[in-house]
Image (cartoon, rainbow, N blue to C red):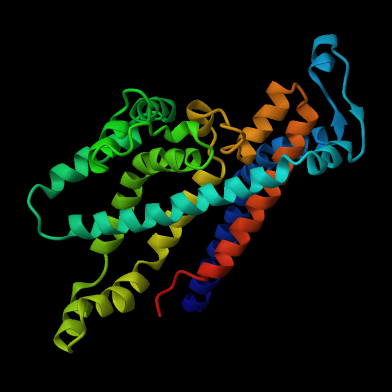
Length: 312
């Protein structure tokens, strides 16, 4: 009898607890989700709407709203030979920086994970580029690439024994994007290195020792044990690098402004030019909409390629 009563009391408490959890979810979690969703979607929806309007600077000055022009902004965008090269340069820049960033970051992480002297000191100072504001890092590399008295000109002249003395990396359409990629790597590699280093230090040493005792080489241990255990960290590092460089604007705009001859005009730069240089906010919004759609496609394909994070 007493046992049955205690059981009923526990049931009542459980029911009350569930009701309390439901009330908590309704009062706190649900409004938070709704507010966050609205906060994220409103700018996106507004940008899409603006891309269908004939909305120029004269509308802002006169206080008149933009007029609906259907797909005219997109038609002009796809027929004026600007969008295609911008998409190509965006993907090319992103690919160069992401691949080089991962290779350099992993190499540095492996070095710092070994028993070298002053490893802590190197970990501390290597974060300096990442802490420097993007505009400042762009100015630093503009000085390095300066064609008359820049450091890069001097180094190339010494390496080539004076055969090349007029290197102007940012002034040439064939090398400008590479110069910006080098500046981007200087700033982004340190953070990737520390993240990959943290992943390396979480790889079980016992498994590596067992594999070594069984005759596995260092290369086999790295590709068959280390990399699979670091899959979740690698996925985060690569996704951060892809997003960061796909939307890169301040570095490119400060160093080249999209030139020379539009050789470094990415989607971010094209959007800014259309909106604030050509004074056509509707066209700029159209570029932004295309950029967002491509970013979604890239993220979906990347997640599909990487698969889940569990180690098998």
